[in-house]
Image (cartoon, rainbow, N blue to C red):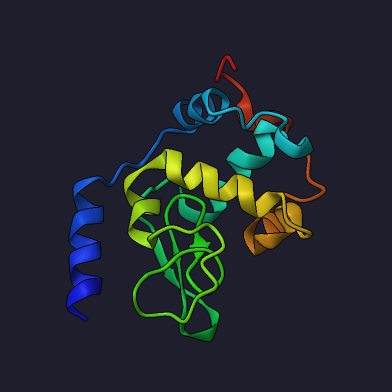
Length: 142
């Protein structure tokens, strides 16, 4: 429990909630536009519905795990939170996903390279897949 409290305190110190266009530009800077065939609008839609563009978001998930950061990356499969039995597919601490968007983006790239692609995220399936996302980047100049 002490470790979780420390992780959360560290994450709060680095928390940021992006504006939609600011986040779109950040994603573009990190090479996410067209990465593995995924449009920038899909990435923006995913993160808007997953975390509200909040780098410090956490959500309890299945199997006593937690989703972390702006992409809501799960501790059972992708990161180590010190509590969940994990595969740690990204080889990263879950607190790093809340502290550094570069780490979050690298992990999201690893996830999307997997067999599920964007379908690894339920929020993308339920809110973005097959939808007209043309308005997602309106006014962003990206």
